[in-house]
Image (cartoon, rainbow, N blue to C red; front, side, top):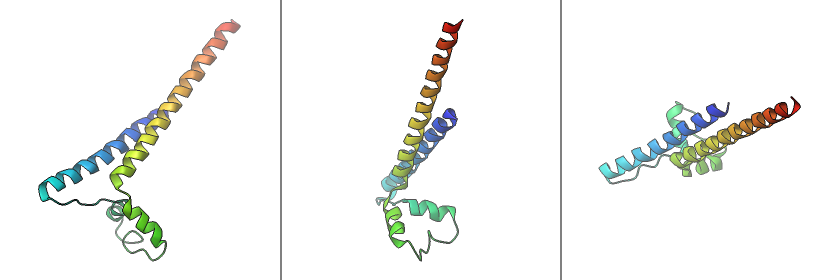
Length: 106
């Protein structure tokens, strides 16, 4: 489970960096910044619905429209990497402690 969290976190961080890199390339080519928010991600993943036409929770829609997708993916991915690494360290520590107690009992 720890490896899945760690590798998944790396993948999410790379996705965030790829989005940021794509935005930079478009800026260098065209001379204008193309905003790519969490709402844009939702619009890409769905045909219609709340992401395209919010009828309720309009404040949440505005907040999500202000959050850059690249930043969100990098932060979430980094959190997954840290969580996976801490679980791996906890498991190794528990295995070493178990080995020590087994060794002392013999």
